[in-house]
Length: 221
Image (tube, rainbow, N blue to C red; front, side, top):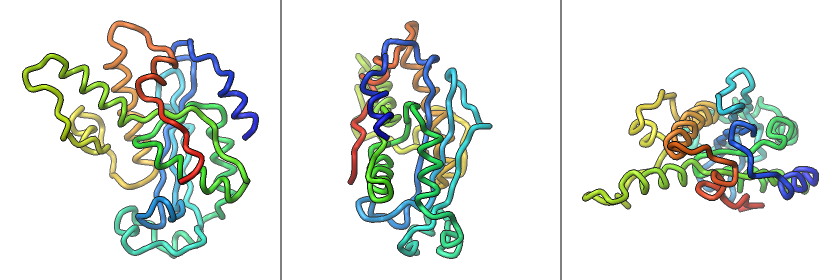
């Protein structure tokens, strides 16, 4: 984790996006309280050369220390019995650390996922991820602000920015929601779509992407 912090502190942000690796991730929790509940599953998809590499995907259930709430089971479908048979958190987080490496992390409202992940990493390893993080929700808002600039209707500040609504709006392939892997894949499609639209005639660097969609990688929540 120290190496990761040093890597991102000195990372050259001036190269085209095609020269960086991205990991798109999502989590599901034991309950609906992100500040207290634990991760019950993690899904992630790799993007290399701005293409989804489905062969290098990650999906893991996690055996939490607390019981999965009935309300959350209705959301993600992972029962307490299924969670109890999953690998322990340390094993899963080691896989996540190896998988994410020095990739830029992408997610929809990614600050919440990273807050939970870093809280769990701090408990298990006394460290956190320091990867640069980009939020597709921020990218979508930036796209709409540019798209509606100067239009009579103006920017719709009440517009929904949830993953499903945006995927419908942009006519993207749709995957069953509230599954960590499916939501990561859905976010990957959204990310590539938005980058294509936002770049327009210019070629973005990682510095451009960070400026528009970058978020603070929260150490814990």
